[in-house]
Length: 322
Ligand SMILES: C[S@@+](CC[C@H](N)C(=O)[O-])C[C@H]1O[C@@H](n2cnc3c(N)ncnc32)[C@H](O)[C@@H]1O
Image (tube, rainbow, N blue to C red):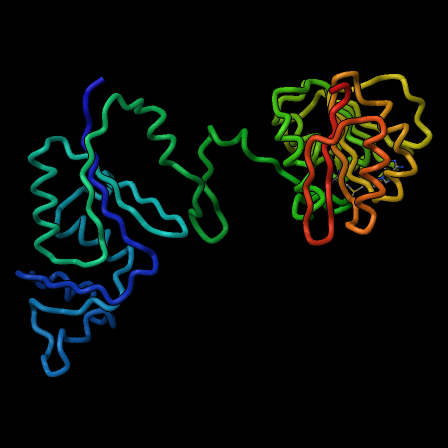
């Protein structure tokens, strides 16, 4: 694969009061930014603004982009802009080293502070994937988001009007982290108290092939069913039952139960009986007050391999037969 050049301009998002000394200002800058506060202040207190010396009070990404396109004459469609919490960067792939050096020289002549310019030689790039890496979801308008199609797999759509389980609650987050931690080590999955179905959807993302979800509430089952459809999941078992009254006949590679401590304790034997000989059990919804009691109870039959503790809640991961 051939070598490729990459030129990057990086602007820290908190970067303010940069100095911009512009020589040969061509008037265009004034026509575009003339009414902008940015160009009002001269470099020293007693110096009036002139056409070649300004303090740029707030170098914004928009302005930096403008400099690259209008002053350096880079085609706007060839610039890749990326913004995260720390910085905004503009990447451009020059066709020759000479072009890269010229662009750097031109940019450096503007004496813009707080923008780092970096020229890199990229070797053996897999361009298909490189492009994918740079293309992140972004807000197209205030109410439209572009999501690269190949990231679809990383998304879970949730409607939670009838049930618990948006993913915002700590107990659910602990559960999904525990499920992720055993990614690839389970195929069959049982979700006791599925709510919106969120844990089943997460388990499917992390490799489950055969999923069973149940809840005591009819509303939750209705909600979970709708969420499975929303996420294109058609192969599952879902039913409305009180787990305490379910006959135990099948075991699973991974069992998940995000219930309150009292229910976990009351149904512990039944829950444990559903974990296969080398399987895992993830439990959550344990208030810190009940943590020791719940941990001790389940530890009598299974080995505790992971503990998650927050300010109010805790979750545990157990393995059978270690
Ligand atoms: C805290 S929510 C968890 C929802 C979802 N699994 C999550 O992690 O976000 C607990 C769910 O368990 C259900 N539930 C409580 N007791 C149950 C029982 N004995 N049998 C089946 N489901 C039960 C509730 O209806 C509720 O939807």
